[in-house]
Image (cartoon, rainbow, N blue to C red; front, side):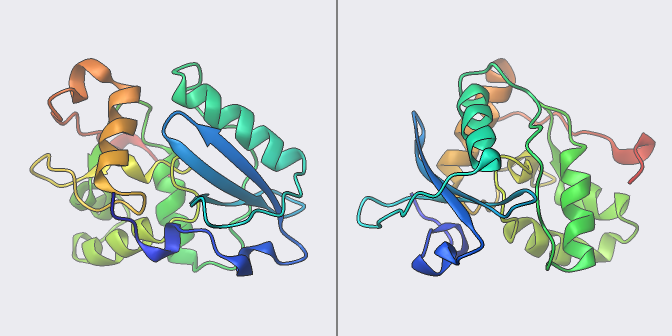
Length: 186
């Protein structure tokens, strides 16, 4: 499974203000990090990386919710998030991602149109790829206009599995069910 480097845990993630927790799931191992106000990241954990676990209430809540989601027992994450320090545009894209309903998908083009500029499709894709909270902020629900699976920080196989968890009948063959943003507001 190929992953972008931004999705991989590194030692610099153990800054003194970040609380960390290891999560062993049926879909792989993750590390979550949180500040004292909310969840900051979800990253793939590799066996050769040490985790100095320092959990807090947000990492604990993320663990419970992530495991429930992967077990098809949770459709919406409630863990508070902390995305301070990212650009206003990225935060706007991520807020729009949270509005995509469980089991539905949208395209990068539809998302950029919803945000007011179809020419911003690459910027939307870049913000999507830089999402520090994959799964929690459901960037896996964004697919190509033709229904193809395109780009995902945790790898296309993980994207396929997540879509299958949310809607197994529909995504067994990776069909699209494009969510229409027209009636949504940020």
